Amino acid sequence: MPDIALFPSANHVLPEGKLEITIAEQRYQRMLKESVEGQRDFALCMRSEEENDADETITRIPAIATKVSVVDFNALENGLLSIVVEGETKIRILSVKHESDHLLIADYLPFKAWPPVPVSAKHECLIDKLKLFFATMPEIGAFYQNGEFDNLSWVCQRWIECLPLEVHYKQLLIAQDSPALTARFLLKLFDNQQLFDDDIN
Image (spheres, rainbow, N blue to C red):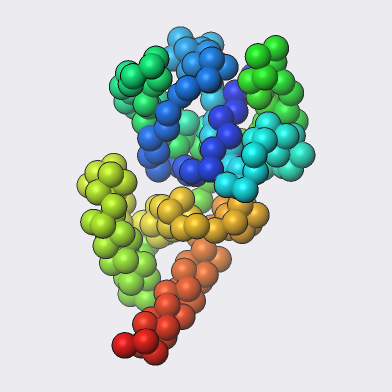
C-alpha cells in the first residue's frame, strides 16, 4: 500500500465531516500540491492543543487518522491557502518517518468504518442539540445543511469532532466498531448537563 502524508491538527475531522484549515508551511504546501496532482494522499491526524511539537507527538503515539480530500480552497494574504477538506476513511497509522523538509509520512492500514445506524427515539436529543450547535456556529453548520441526521453514526462522528475532549478519549471512541459507546457517552453527558442547568435555574 502507498504511504500517506500527515497533517497534524488540533481540530479533528472524521468520515463525512468537513473542516477548514490554513496551509502555511512549505512542507504542507508541497503536501497539498502532491495530493491535488494525484501523487500522494494526505490525512489529518490528531494532536492535543497542549502539544507544541506535533511531529514528535505523532511519532511517539499510535493514532487513528482520517484520509481526506480537498473540496474547496481560497488564496489568502501572504501566500497562505485556506482549504476545506472532507473526511473519507479512517486509517490506522503503523509507522511514521520524516522527509527532508520534515513532512510526516506514514505507513498505514484502513480502519473499519462505522455502519449506518438508524436513530431511535432516545437519541432524538442528540440530533436536536447538534442542530442547535450548528445554528450557533454557522461557519460549521454551513457544511451540514444536508446532513445525515437520521444516521446515528454520522451524528456521533460530528459530536466527536466538535466536543473539546482529550485526544485519547476521542481515539477510544472512534476505535469502536459502532457509535454505541459514543451515543451512551453523549446521552450521559447531556443528561448531567441538564441536571446542572436545573440546579442553577
